[in-house]
Every structure is written in C-alpha cells, then in structure tokens.
Amino acid sequence: MDERTEALTTWRRLRRFVLPLRCLLCGAAGAAGIDLCVDCAAELPRNRSCCSRCALPLATLAELCGQCQRRAPPWDAAWAPFRYGWPLDRLESCYKFGADLAAGRVLATLWRREPCPVTLPQLLLAVPLHRGRLRRRGYNQALELARPLAHGLGVPLRHDVLQRVRHTEAQTELDAIGRRRNVRGAFALRAGIALPPHVAILDDVMTTGATLAECARVLRRAGVQQVDVWALARAPLKQK
Ligand SMILES: [Zn+2]
Ligand SMILES: [Zn+2]
Image (cartoon, rainbow, N blue to C red):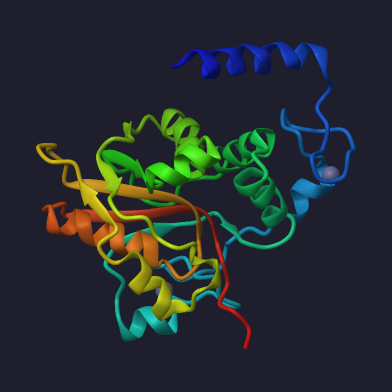
C-alpha cells in the first residue's frame, strides 16, 4: 500500500466516527454501513433474469440469449449482479468519470454483498487501463472494485499479469463491430507468468462484452482452461 492509499484508508476509518453516512444520490441518511439510503438501495436494478452464459439482461428467465445461441462467447461463465441502469449508472459515472471514490466504495460494497453464483476462480484479473489513461484518471476503476471483492471472497488478485499494450479509443461511441475491432490486439500477458487453470477477468461495466472477450481470448491462447468474466453491471441491449 502506498502512502496515499494508506492515508485514505485511515481517513475512511476515522470518518466513520466523525461524519454520519449520507446517501450519495439523494442526501438522506445512509443505511447498512454505506453512503446510500434504503430507498435508493432498493431501486438498484438487480440482474436476476439474464442469459446464463453472458449475463445479458432478459425480460424472462431463459437459458441462453439469442446471441449466445447463435455464437458462444469466448468465455465459460459470466457474473454481473446488477443491470446498468438508474440509479447505479449515476454512481458509476461519478466514480469513473468524476473521480468520486466514495461512489466507488459504495459500488464495491454492494457487489461484495451479492451472492456469487459461479465457481470461484483460482485467480482474478482486472481489465487493465493503458498507461496514459491510468495516469490521467489516477486509478483503474475496475481494479479498485476488484480489490475488496477479491479480499472478501478469498481469491488472489493480480494487476501485473494482463497488460494493455495499445491505447484504444473509448468504446462509448462505437457499435458492437466497432468495439470488437477497437480492442483487437490491445491486451497481452506479461511473459513468464504461470497461470492457473481457472481465471476470471473483471471489468466495471460490460456493454457488448467486446473488451472482456478480447481478454478471454488472450487467456485461452495462453492455455487457461476456464475463463469467466465478471462485471459489476451488464448493460441491456440498446432499444432500436
Ligand atoms: Zn438515497
Ligand atoms: Zn448470452
């Protein structure tokens, strides 16, 4: 832990005694040990009926979504406990684009409290940021969500195994094909690291799954037998 992280951790502990918990969304009193009130927490969209392979939100419970029936994704199982929608999207954008680390802590705690429906991997990796973006943002939003989760589940987490070797455009403005093309060849494994047979890769939000799919392919090529993908939230298909 570097000095800055240590100071932050100490401040967080102290703040519990100094400041009351306050809902980051509406300002009401926080509940259950987090800066979120009961009502806002109840509104968080849970991803209960979803595709068993890619966690795509579905209107009714079905084994596989249409896309996975047509073509299986390059991973084995997916876990995304929430849907990307109000009010989770608000917390996520404060965290990711507004450097609101309090929102990140709320999201990490919410995730940690969800039951894990998949077999635990032997190693967890977070989708890496390119050096330039990491420098600008100051933190990797996926890695900071992964830390408390890995700790809570007792799964080893490494941040030095998977690397982003090429800068990519933000995926937000791209369609599914554009996203796949954008991340092709963007990731590589650090040489000389032995990987266990079962690895999961974690990202904050999974939209089309292009980034996680590209990471999964890299791990498969390195001989990992089971690759799972984890995301805090899965975006529903865009309504046309
Ligand atoms: Zn609230
Ligand atoms: Zn699917």
